[in-house]
Image 1 (cartoon, rainbow, N blue to C red):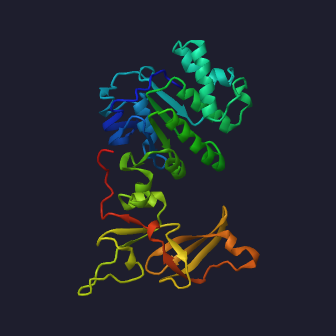
Image 2 (image 1 turned 90 degrees about the vertical axis):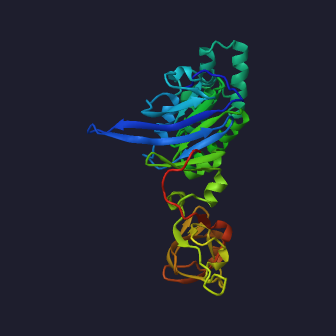
Image 3 (image 1 turned 180 degrees about the vertical axis):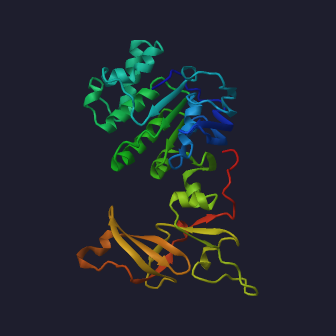
Length: 368
């Protein structure tokens, strides 16, 4: 679905202030889907709303679109309040996981739909359709019936159709979730390319970490209706604001940074070299530890398995807990023995793959 609009390229973009969205359970109880969220999306920025099912991310997107009422707070575009502005007057593009293409129209006429509704002349429509089909990798597909397309092709047509009227803001709700893993990974990069090439401001809702990190300039992590952290992908990964965020991102084991023993001025222990301030929580996950016969960290293999070209060892690390150790599977070609449960291993720490988590509570963050 696409609503006509014009990209501004200037202005303040989307403002979300104290927005609360309510819903009614099956038993009639009123519950909170979005709880007092503050958020900004700058012109030309792609922001991902990332969180588990039920975190409130889709409810927030639907409120921005005008599809859900706002119980408290307000939404603005370029400083203008959106209260009372209907969906079709907001100039926002909408894309959902099923694409919602028109089966009686071919690819080109699907892409051109919003332009037709806006009264764009035929020559300009055709040029825009050609431009966008080329951008999403479907050049020459214009006369194809949409019913003959694969799932990935249909979603690319839906993306082109949503971008065609140059929406002021693009809202994408789990657009790749119905596709298989390999296809999602490929299309996430194409979605990013299409949004940035057209300079489109966008909010991309997903529960998939890889999609969010591929598509977004910044990622907003949500849980239980609240905003936990907003940061660029690299900052989010290496500096999660709270332990809860770190666990959601996939970090598995946590320990407090070593303190400096009285009188020595030098921290001790296998993680002493990490150099974090006292009270900082160190978060370990896949890639934080590597096998090394001279490594200072000791552990016992719990499980070992082959996955997508790597061997994953779950190791019970002394003084830390269970952490996944990832190794190239090629190391075991030619009959080299792989570790088995119960084996004792020594490990070294990859400092760059250990996150530092401030000694902070898991409450909502301030304005993103």
